[in-house]
Image (cartoon, rainbow, N blue to C red; front, top):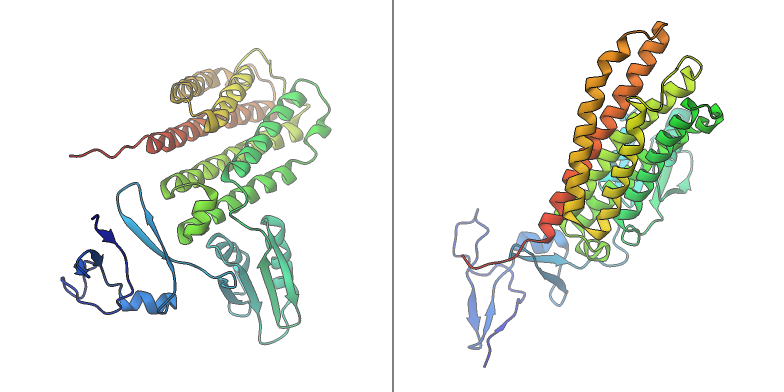
Length: 358
């Protein structure tokens, strides 16, 4: 008869090691069932009682993870006293959002000042899935209305990629003679990129804290963290795409660059290789991703080598500086795309890990 391995509730059982150790001794009961006690401190901190259910999950490392099942009414809340945090309140709200708070309460013993209300509106513009549930003179309660486990991480990655590509392509279009109105909404697109990064990092934080979110997102912890790295890389790319677009919008009349010369002739190549990398988040072709990485690294070197020529024969100082900064932004876009490819390769190699006997 096969032995049955069952985890039972035995709070405060015997411990083989010292009080500071996390090691516990397996015990046998009934001749075939093995049991182990759980730390009383952990039981109390989770609010668990006899008869409650925990989830057990075997990780790729061979470890066994035990997690309390969170009830549907259990919410995580942060309270911020706006009188105490008069400066930096927006940053604290963003930090609360990233940490996975379901409820953010802004309180004040006196009447909440107008500046605080402005900070709250700014926070709501910069994030996704949050809204004001309650608002009076002394308290503003912001709640999450988005189920973080229903939106796949790749959705935000794809949206950031599309926004970055559109900024670069529209900038190239204006340099090539199209109407500058193509770049009328640069700031809005930048805010969308930043908001998507924040949303993805919030999802990753929630998946690390809640196994049910992790399972519904269908990503393991390592993969989730690499998604966060990719999102931060894309945000930096968004910064340079925005910088490029702003330069083109402001100096469109002074810029006289040739599409068949560096750095402009590198933009279609960059665009194609970045598209390849994003597409292979799904097809997972390691060879294609690595080839794209090498192409982008070489392209960045070629742009840098050509930048010396930008300092000669450019006429006005406005033109010279604008065109050099455009080249620098395109070069940085290539460099961050290389980082994107490296993070994706890390994820794919993790997926290929196998357990073997030593």
